[in-house]
Structures are given as C-alpha cells and as structure tokens.
Amino acid sequence: MALKLYNTLTRKKETFKSIKKGEVGMYVCGPTVNGVPHLGHAKQQVSFDVLRKYLKFRGYKVKFVSNITDVDDKIINAANQQKRDIKEFTEENIKKHLQDYEELNVEKPDVQPRAMQYIKQMIELVGLLEKKGYAYVLSDGVYFDISKFKNYGKLSRQNVEDLKAGARVAERTDKRNKEDFVLWKFSKPGEPEWNSPWGKGRPGWHIECSAMNHSILGLPFDIHGGGQDLMFPHHEDELAQSEAAYDVKCANFWIHNGMVNVDKIKMSKSLGNFKTIRDLLKDYTGMAIRYLVLTNQYRKPVDFSVNSLDDAKNSYDRLKKIASELKDDKKENEKYLKQFTKAMDDDLNTPRALAVLWELVRDEKATGKLETIKKMDEVFGLRLLEKEKAVSVPAEIKKLADERDVARKEKNWKRSDELRNKIAEKGWKVSDIDKGYKLEKL
Image (tube, rainbow, N blue to C red):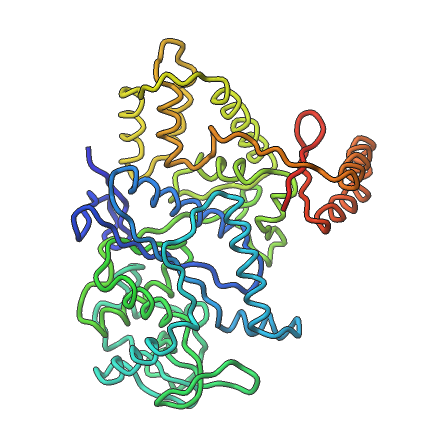
C-alpha cells in the first residue's frame, strides 16, 4: 500500500513520495491574527494536523512549518478601529489562536515563523524579482508583473485573460496588468514600516510565505497546504514569485482543505453566520469539534450545525467511554490496522478510518482493541485513552455553575448566558452534559 494525496496542481490523486527519503518538509499557511480564530481555522488546523500525524504514523520524520501573519492590511485596519497598539493587538490574538488550537489538540508547528521576523528576507526576494525583470515600481509600491511569468494561473487553472483581480489586490489604472500584485507597499502615516531600497514600507501579503518557506525549508519542498480560499490569489501568486525568483519548483504537492458551512450555508460575516472556535467551546468540548471535522474528508466542506455538533459530541462520548472500559492485552489487531491504513492511504479518508475504528470496538471477537485504538489515535488525536484530569473547583465557581444550571432548566437563557460569561471571566469554562454540567479550567 502507498499513500495517495490529491494534488491541486495536477488535479489528481498521486502516490506520495518525499524528496528526501524518510523525511517530509511541509509548509501550511497559518492564520492572519486580526481577530480570534474562527471555524475555518478549526477545519484547516485539524486537517493538516491529521496529515502531519499520519505521515509520522507512516514512519516519516516531518518538519512542519506554519507561519503567523502579524502584519497586513486586515490587522492594521482592525487595530486602528479598536484604537489599539498593533503589536499589543497581534500578541493578544496570537495567544488566543494558540489557546484555541490547543483545545482542539492541534500539535504546535516545529517552526512557527512570524512575518515581521523575515522582513530582511522579503526585501531580498523583492530585489531578486526586480533584478530578473519581474517587478516594477509605482507610486504606492513594488508590483509583480504576471505577464512575465508564463505559467501564471497553473495552480488555480484560471485563464489569465479571464482573471478577475483577487482579494487583497488593490485596483489601480496604471498597473501593467490588472492582476499584478503588490510585493512591497510604501507606508502611510501611522503604519508599521521598514527601510528598503524602494523606500519605507512593509511587505505585501503574498511575499511573506515565499520568503519564509524558502528560508526555512528550501525549494522545492514536499507539501504546501492551506484552505481552498487561499488557492487564488494567495497560493497562485506565491507560486509565481517563488518559481520566478529561484528558477525551481516551489512544492511537489499543493493540498487544500475544504471550506466551512454553518447550517448548510457557507460561513460568512456578511451572512451573519460567522462563528469562532470560542463560540462553540461554550457548549462543546474541543474533542467533539475535532471529531466532527474528522467525520468529513478534509477536501469536503464541514457543516457546523447544532445537529451535527450534537451527533459528534454523543458519538465521541460513547467512543471514549467504550475505550476507557477496555483491558490492555498488549496486542495490536493487524486486520483492523490494515483497514485503517488503507482508508488513510486513500487521500486521508478519515470518515472511513473512523468507521473502521467503530467496527473494531463493536467486534466482540476482536482482540488487541486497546493497543489498536491507541495506534489509531496517534493519527486521530482524539485523546480517547486519556483520563480526565481531576481539578479542584472553587466554591464560588461551583455556586455560579449551579445557578446557571437552574436558569437553564427554567429556560432563562439570558441569565444562563450572563452566568456563563461571569464564570469565563473568572477563568473557567462550563459545558452542558447529559446530566448537569462540566467545569474546566481555561
């Protein structure tokens, strides 16, 4: 058996073979920290965490790099709207991202570079592109000329003639091509700025990842990942500038996870159904959320509805209870491990792999259940065999939680929410379970 992954670049499943035997270099576009993490982040973080874990399960040594964008238009605008210092604003949001990912049991990257740490490398990259004739200067910054890169559009499969200017690409009439994107932005009053050969300014969004993955992994590397919404223009532009500058393939595999729906409608701020991870953590555990993500193959959309979350919570709780009651017989069940591996080798088919796990626990004749669950959970990351840590709950918190429980039974939702928020302010999270509630330290 061999691992096959869907490569966006070729639009087909391909047998995965690493550039260096036994080792994998993987770069995944991380968050832009202009706010707390939302459900799109949850989908992406869990999807690539599972890929990373499965590559390790398959025996690879993985170098996993995922960046943090800590300077861009969205961050500057959000900080200005809140009249906040940008550095303080980003540090606060970075902390929230890391906390919420930890709730989902997402392993921290081996390397987590921040854009502001790589300004020097970004300036060098822009200079190289200019020297090779791919960049030109306008009144507000330095731009990449897409007409100079003959394969522009090969990742997103869009015809250059039909392309529309993408997100974060400012329209202006003096660009050589309307899809040309900014590499270096000249600074406006009050914005972060750095000195460069072209004048004081800051990097464009796309140049950040190219500079970081080249500096950390070198080119080419094995896997480049991110959400489907990043395919164009971000990844298309990143691929173009990297390959134009260094005359070498950027990555062998481009992998994109599916998007997020809420009640079967695409999540969007404009539609009013935008939700954060923290919104869900008020009522569901991180493991229930992770379980829901795993019930959908990573390239498919996941629907965060009350029904789907309740189903995931109930299934996860049952599975964990079954696992906790098993006795350790120090064996592995080769039959079920083989079925699990077959499912995961098929472009990380986690729904099928979970079904194999359920077949195992329901098979009365199967041996080696506990050790096999332990092995599978190295990939799933569901903490199925971890015991709940006993935490001493202060009397004040217990009293507030009891009051909230009464309010919920009386269907006084306003009072219930007020008490939940008060509990959270004191550093605790209250979750509703079948019989009462559960308290966890934040």
